[in-house]
Length: 156
Length: 65
Image 1 (spheres, chains in turn brown, red):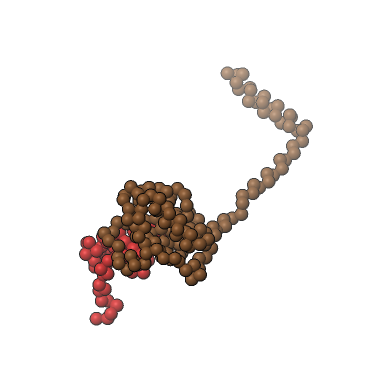
Image 2 (tube, one colour):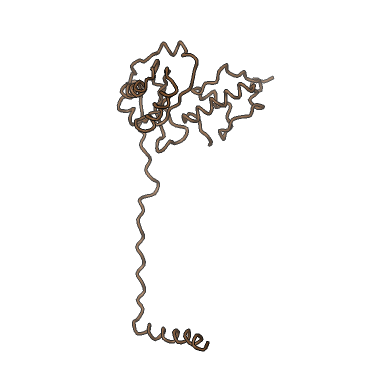
């Protein structure tokens, strides 16, 4: 089973399915059945995605081919999650479906926009202006302090 | 005996795509019920566990709520 991004599937389900089939066959995987399973809301967010298009396939492949295909899917492309399970035989009712064209008019795929951040962009607050100290008062206050601090050191 | 307390027979095969059937074996917090509560055999409970975990991976079922 393959999860595809809604934005890619909106461009065309048949094109998405053909791209998926091409990616599988590139690694020597025999695609017996590949059909549109549904479009639904995810039970939890995956990245920024809240919805996905599901494709169900029945394949004939070796373990190495499956690993190579998985690596390929996760690197690039609209497939963001896939699950391969070993089965002894393909059910006859599934095998009868084969690879059929999808009626895209019958399927409504809503747009899955990434949600906007709750808060706006960070804006630094302006620093408060420093208080102005009169220039004449500053040396008068600093001299006695320096004399007091120096006095105990000299006595020692 | 009322129908609600009757023990339901488990399906012959737990399918990870059958979300509604699998949800019957989950708590409101999406935890899998124990074998004592489901009444399944050890083999059936293992099949249920695998089916739920496949469904969770595919975001058909939540890990927690």
